[in-house]
Length: 118
Image 1 (cartoon, rainbow, N blue to C red):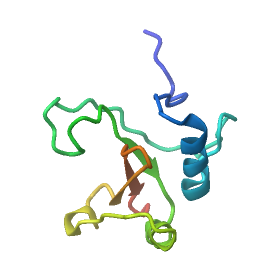
Image 2: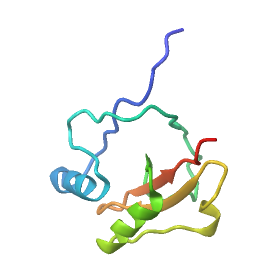
Image 3: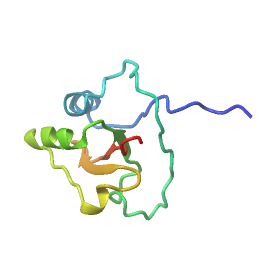
């Protein structure tokens, strides 16, 4: 059976798409509508139960963005006045390290630094 080879894009509704795209570009380095070349690596596609408490009730989705240096990005985001959450049990997991921010419209964004290879 033929299969897909990866995620081709993430599309979502916004009250102010231009301003929100600028926020993602400025603080996370996500390019706007141009194709975004990315290094090869794993991605997770996982539905959660509708009553999950992993992200706020009322939000239908959360995006997970892979980062190379989570500590540096958290410092940059905090310096820009963006609230960054990191709990002790999100550090040093078998899957790597995690932190959480929210975009200006309240969408949760999980920042993920995979574990070092080796």
